[in-house]
Length: 436
Length: 161
Image (cartoon, rainbow over all chains, first blue to last red; front, side, top):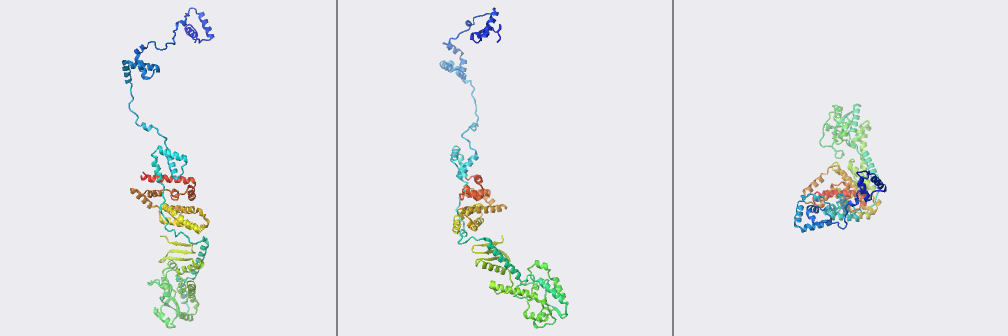
């Protein structure tokens, strides 16, 4: 603060309070000496003094005169404790002050209404995240709870009783083993057996089956497609008709032979009926040939060749026959010629070698078939081999290899194979059945 | 293994194996086939199977056979199960175990296997992992998911409360 005529009193007060430094003291003295007109009153005498022995209000009765302020201060809690107690005692003694204090208390505005969702804001014990609770419950179910986890789960369920329902729900998910027994346990047991390698027996079985199949195919009579040799023979005969005039063709009907293997249907289609032509002499040499020649009553003067050509045209093509192996017609069957007739034909035929080989082949195969049947199957039967024979051969072969413990069995419904069972030993067998 | 051990395995495990397959496939004939095939494979490999692990071998084989069968079956719609679920929903108070089995059929095959192995046979996590080819963590996760799904299934029918 700058010392001048307007501030020198403040400087004087600061001197009295001892706030001036020595330099400021000297500056103040210099200023007062330079301004002697200024009053230099004794400040110490002008200031009041406080008696520390009487700090209280000098007139307590005066309090009653300003009762409103004290009462309001009392209600607002603004009084010091000692004064608050004295004022309260004064109010209690004076009915007017009491009434005044009551009025002031009644004019205080009271808060109305409350927040209805207050309970939602309240916080109880610790909330549990659901995944943690579920994990603990499942772990309890699986017996995986550690000691600390067990304590934690118990505490959670105790503090949240609604979790007990969750606990029961998980406990209900445990499956109980039913009292179900396997019905055919005896079928699983093995009495005596040994572990065998599978491939050698399979190889043996496959080899046997292949050999027998090959033998069957080679020895099988070629009667299922007899058209081929028949046509060949027919062409051969056709060529021969252009030779010497002493030969002619006689249509010889095919006789029904029960001993013949090839089944001949009862109803014959005349369109596919093919006469079998054999070269004979113009005049029958004996009664047998004469009877045969008279059966169909062919005209000796008619050109038999034309009939043959017509028959060829009516006969189904080779490709058609191969695609339809089932209809084996009467006219396509091989003719069984009696031995005496064969000798006769050999005598009269200038070139019998052209005809006989066609019949020698089936005879050879028939002989082999009969031999196989007799030696392998112990049967006396002259019919050609069929599918049942092939199966029987395979069966006997497997029996021989497996020491009588194996075999093959084929079940059929009509011509359709429904089940095949191949047994290669005591504990080894394969079954195959046609699907539904 | 020898013959005696094999027959002992039949006595000890055929029923459990059949239950496992039956609960899984819900078809008696197919379950029988699984049991027969499992024991046939055991018989073929008899000398190579340790007697102490025959149960694990049988259930592992059965599990693989069941998975193959389920995958074949999944290619076609299994209407019977749909009808059965519908029948459950129409009944007022169905048996809890029956409903649980119906719920079991809704689980994926792996979850179904681990839950069945756990509940019916009491296998440990390690054993289930060995049988199913899963690791330990996967087994635990699948069991957790299976339990959750079953709880939701039966919980929706208000059977527990």
